[in-house]
Image (cartoon, rainbow, N blue to C red):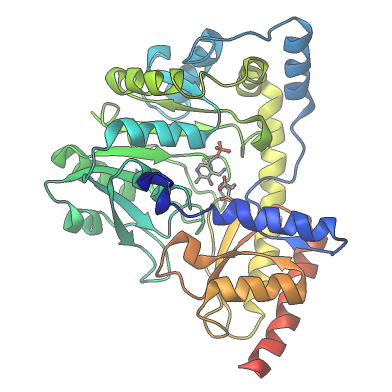
Length: 393
Ligand code: PMP
Ligand code: GLU
């Protein structure tokens, strides 16, 4: 009965595990949630106030499809100044979440059968979006050396006359890997040479450690026309539930995304856009982001230290995001089974590695966007539960 296009699409593993944990909590179980990829901080007060103000002032009607002019201007200004991407407000579309911006970009660019390069491990929604566009996903495994770094050579090897797009995500969900300037330059050179478009998902740009620099591929010469830069407010400003994101793209691509948005979601919520403008332009926001990233950094150190204390568990050292992608294959190759076991027996929610790529058997993604106490208690529970798991094997 259902349409073919939805049949291959699996549920979102990240959202599912979070929902499952919520149900168990509702039944009175004490669950520690390493699943949800969302900051545990409240949205900063000055941003909330901007939304209250907008509602009070009656800013409750439809807005232009592409977003309110002052927000588009502010986004263009940010991209020019911080990311060195040459663009104007005409190149900006504001969307209900970065997810919608990604979906629109893929839908308007990919023809049936065209190939989309997806470095793997990859964030759970890229594959379903490509499937919905009837594109052909071509995965590029990046985990071979344990560093999860995408090499330009790997891209070159997979380019065919059907290659349309590369999806780049640095800092990367789920691995936390951050590509350096030289890595990005090499990728830009290949894509420019072969006229491959790039969707650059930069939603974790501020959540970065070890003095690493975030580099936007759209800032390299002649790359602004080939690159669709995606970003959003969910992570940087703790605004996951508000649903606000954006894309910057060449005008013809932007106009196509505008048509898709006009006939589907119309535009992001009016007063949320006003709050987004304040988030982006208020000097208070920067201090809040710094405070949040410092907290994540401390948690990152503790969670990686504690995880590698568990016998045989291997854990990458993430330079960005708030995820660790840890290898538990010494205990269990089937990551869905392991995640289920940990949820049931230890009351700990993690996302199975295989949701991020089929080669990620034995991996679990743990989000450390939760308190230090919960992190240490949660890892301790995993450690205890795995002792029994070994006995069971
Ligand atoms: N890209 C990545 C890599 C993500 O982890 C997420 C998860 N929130 C998104 C995009 C979508 O973010 P949102 O729709 O909340 O802006
Ligand atoms: N992006 C977050 C995650 O990876 C939130 C859930 C989602 O949108 O997939 O957990």
